[in-house]
Length: 128
Image (tube, rainbow, N blue to C red; front, side, top):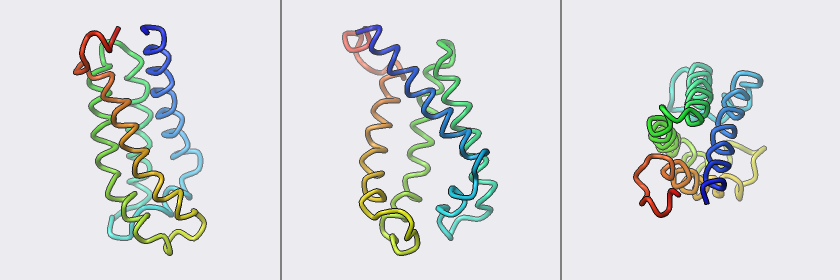
């Protein structure tokens, strides 16, 4: 179980780090999905990308694992309203299938649970 947990931690950390890098490499698709009620879309894309890279990499460092896991949870909660806005206003995002917009909502719950696994709040029998 320990090997599986370590692999899952690396997968989650690298997933977030890679997603964050994409915010800088190709910001336009991310800017396009920032809800219109939020100011400074490009700055928010860069800020969220930096947070994803930093938290994803911090998750891989034992000393920062708990902090990073809580940070990822906070980030996922912070972007949830924007994802909900997208799902409720699919007509504003014609290049994204509505099923994908709605599918992102439960996926965030899965990602939150995944990150929570590394907060140290899970029972020791599950952590081993």
